[in-house]
Image (cartoon, rainbow, N blue to C red; front, side):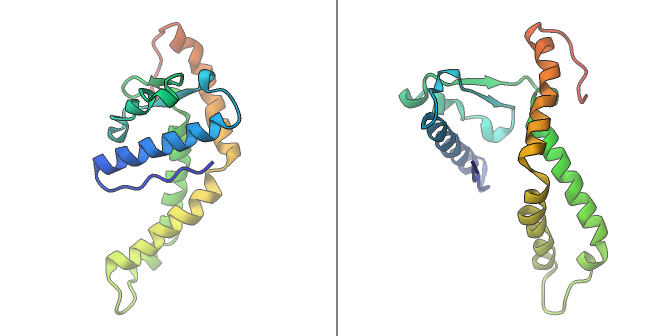
Amino acid sequence: MELSIRKGGSGRLSESLQTSIRCMLRAQAAHADLTNVVVVLDNAPCHNRAETVFEEDEFAQVECLRLGPYSPMLNGIENVFSAYKSAVKRYMAVNRRKILDVPQGMTITAHRSTFLLHAANIIFREVVTSELCRKCIHHIFGFLSDAILMKDMAVGT
């Protein structure tokens, strides 16, 4: 499932996230009961009002789990984003000359935006695969028992 979240100020991003969570949960409900569904959120500012979705009758049986401050070892998406950012940095380094050579009649912003759009639309699909997501989620399993037992964990491992 693909969820689209558009930036546009913290309030609009929060609303878009809420809409995306509802969409995701309705799609899940079409296949299975929601009583065993847990949505994990970190402390990103756009997540501040996400809990309101779980207060709605339609989604009351879904559990929202908030991660503690800076706990990437329990947040698989952080590793996915890290892989994506690395790929974008490699792409930008390889294309540095092209990025700096702004064509006549084009603004620097417009020219650089074409490279960023390529990174967002092409590189994202190449890097962020189901297999990568599976591996990153599987990686957090090694930390879950320690979290359940309330053990201290090294950050960033």
